[in-house]
Image 1 (cartoon, rainbow, N blue to C red):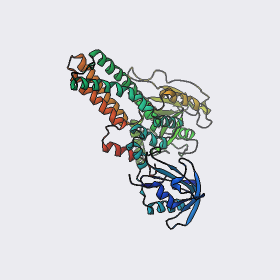
Image 2: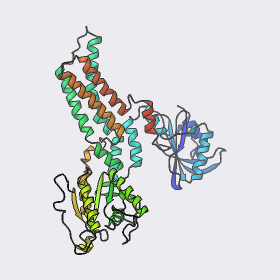
Image 3: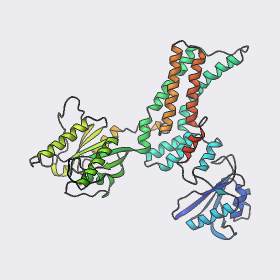
Image 4: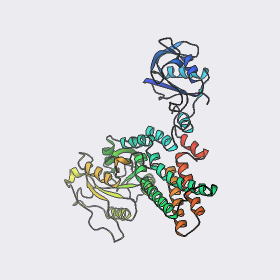
Length: 470
């Protein structure tokens, strides 16, 4: 394939900068921009060993001194002749070296083109390619571990036995049909049923990982809601570790949603601090309340913050109790899990409590009751435990075998549906060719997942998420 080159490190100045090349004429191009210290041509250097030398611009002038390494095909990331130039991380130096490589016959690589070539050359399947960008985008250590394990083939190893058993059914059927005179053992109904049953169970187990995979990859959308001045913004600031939202004693200070990502109980929360939910005549605050209600509808977790116990003897307007009652009623009638957060513990001294019996039998209470202080930090660990219990990390041995995006889930679900149709056809006494059609459809769906039968638009969509140089 033609020669591509790109700066593989960021645009900002750094200690080290890296340029990558891959394709036909790779080593000859490097010989024009890199002069090894020992005088031996770069193309003759020992593979996978860094060599010191001078970096040259397009006119042969020295612009830096650094190191280079070559990776002959097929033992490279892309499966082609590849090389890396390691220089000082000056953006000017990196641009000069890239210009020299382009003058030497390379072209600028597109986003994800190195990894795409690795996929096209059989160095990885699509699940591993997706793991590359997941590893780059990982925001938690758990997400990085899962992506690294998937890059190592974790998901592929789960899928291979399923594909193998389905392929065995299909291949033996065709062998018997195509070579009737040969002594080939036909696959019987009992064996076929066992294979389809095993595939159904394995695919169902994979689909059960979807929720954990999504949480691991993109986190949980968590809305912080409550009446005005309940302590919502203070909780956001406490979890974020800095003053992300403005906090005052004036009700209605927060008039728009404020978002921040935090790690709570090992779970990445996409926190949304909302405007206090109440009826108001203020046009600006009313817009904020409307946005808060939309955030509430889209949330996967709700933290209902209340300072109701700060001073139970203090008189509160009737409207306050009506707003609070409506809010509680709304919480108990929606499917999204919610946690009741009794705020300002430093003022009440209360460490535990409950809402008691609230609402009618159709009302569902909170998943947890937490008392905390956003000022002192007391009780924050209780909130972390509550969040962790709602979104368990799962067994560490599952790393790499979780479905982490919609494309993967859709492909596995289609494969399982086809397997189940095959089982139903077999139980209904249909001819083997009807079962075979479903087995082949399941294989096609799994092939789409790994890239064996993936359409070009699917492949293009995956690699469009990559950065240049990867």
